[in-house]
Image (cartoon, rainbow, N blue to C red; front, side, top):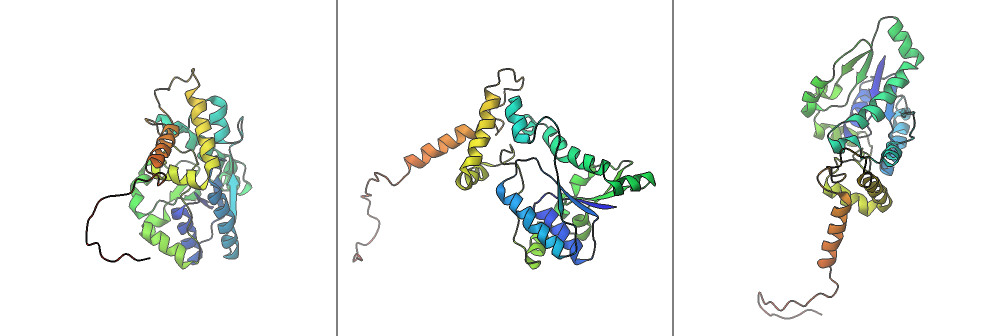
Length: 263
């Protein structure tokens, strides 16, 4: 049984494009939904699922963690904590990405049949040729073996983008929660410009954690770990105001020939 863990980004999209072009049909494609992806990602999943169906590939199956919280955002707000990555851990990825996929396969009839016969499910992972070092941290077990098609095909990031373009697909955006602590400052500003509502929700997570006096890890200053998203955005807005054109003082410098002015 061949299974693809789809991350909705460039690598995993290119991996499936490559499989389709060479007639490699996976049995199932899963996407673990934290409930916190940006709208563009959810839209791309639907768009790409249609392409997959048109190319005789399985559509993408969304899987979600089932428990006390409906989303990672709700868990952070309800518990008054930041995503675990802000504290230097990766528990949110394990809980909201790995566990839902494991549960899906544990309840999948075809998967159970494979295991009953002593076989393994092969999971295709979208590490590209420049990321082969990441594969050494994943160990096979009695249920799963792992395959890295992009590494095998020697596809780097550029090759992945070319494959997506040649398939006539639009390129996917970077897939990540809108409140991911790994986001850079440029990405945060872009999110603010495109989705101010999501920035407000991210800051609500940050505020809830900072106001939780019982949080033992509050040496962390915010979603940026050693800096706060809220403070960064406020400072950026203040800087924009400082350098805005409103009330601009005319420049009295002279740096060339006067020449003739144009109307």
